[in-house]
Length: 365
Image (cartoon, rainbow, N blue to C red; front, side, top):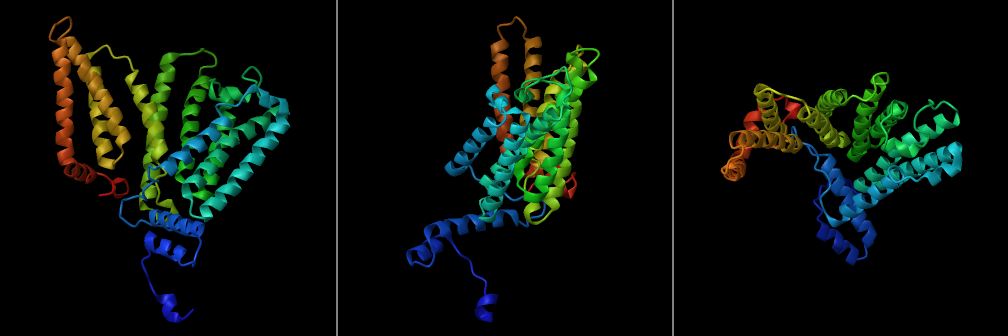
């Protein structure tokens, strides 16, 4: 190849690849693989300050990817039957490790071909197999603590402190795999594991006193705050990174962190009007926080909280009154009007709010 050709820079469209297929330069499958690879590289090499590479499009292909992936993940986690225990502890360990290695090898191959979405799903399945392997290892060595669940199937249905060894091991393995593969969907089992962990830590601390609803609620609040803070740290690192690290690794942490925090907050007992007003103010803060950092999960849950508080006020003011339905109608129309006003000024609102944030948390403009 001449030096002139080596230094040349060209822009290739999908139509030109199709023309190359028609001319017999490359095959159809090669054309599709090249295009998917270039699209993936374009996403992860985005250079907009404060922005992240866009995630996968919502198309039929990706729906098939995720549907098939979730079925496979469910088969090895939620839908595992008691019949699996006929293999014995060491048989389960061998199966889990074989599946795990196979998933990682296929994920490697898919990622090398530019198929980031299915590669992420296969790598995620590998992470989901870690607790099964750890349980089989502990049980096979006779180190599983007595008095609790004797079947791995209960991992997803029973709260018990004995699962903590599986959860810590899963988090450690997930960090290593994330560092190796750098695929955002792999954070999903991490977020789910943190959610499980909050319940199991609470179970450990309540061993002597028995189940205590208020304690579980408060633990949800604390773990939710911690998970959201971790999500913001990951978000900042991702936005300021380059290459494959400039992807949305914080998405699932935000989702589960917000759910834990908001549920723990909403279940708090407050007999005073000041306490309920404070709840409304916190939810208003969530709405503005979501707008400021470009995370709609905060805005959605904050809006739920504000709507609940306004409904509570309407009920108190118009209790046993014929005007109550009218009050609810006006409340709904007011929320719609607020939505219209927000849509018209969304860019200016986000710009003003993000000006108060560190550069790493500012949404893409």
